[in-house]
Image 1 (cartoon, rainbow, N blue to C red):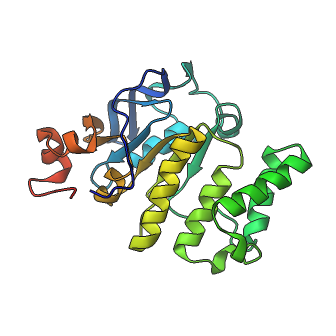
Image 2: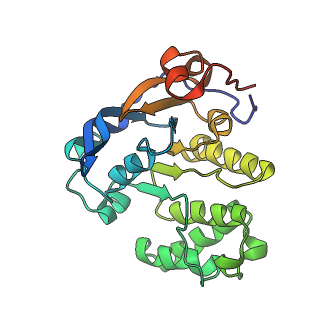
Length: 257
């Protein structure tokens, strides 16, 4: 396995920061999530894996408030947030979201994208400019600061969207397929960014991706979603040896090194 993550947190002394408790959701007659429970602890990087259409993105949409569950509770810092709208989950409960596609204004420059969100979330003009400059520097966006987002490469766009998500200083960051359609070196850069968000910013992260090896290289633990439930969860090494995980997702020949 890649050495992107130098250590893995196997147990957490701090309380859970986010919980989905017995969540169920149907689209018409199709059951997407069936009594699913999932927990993210403070400072943890949690990966979600599973076949296409299993509900990984749906979980993110439930957490952000884009959709509501039919049954069950979504809890942040022990408070049920089912009825809270999207903007309050962003500002009050400090949730950031990096979607698989989009997440930026195509015809605005890198700087203008960051400024547009900062003007909504940061009242103090001086701190707003400081925050924008800090994120541009942090993600090495200075050379493309004045280039419109639609002209950026895939990796540059992903960096920009992550930077946008950090404007509101989230405590929980959701990343939907961050490694999709990116080259090897860009994936490594994003893995390092994700681990640094944990170690330097104390942000709790959930990410899902079909690049299983790349995901497992930068998480503390991962969960396999199958038939609307969590069927296995654990550290990368223990998970690939789990019989339920093999049957639902990995198969017999999958290796991480």
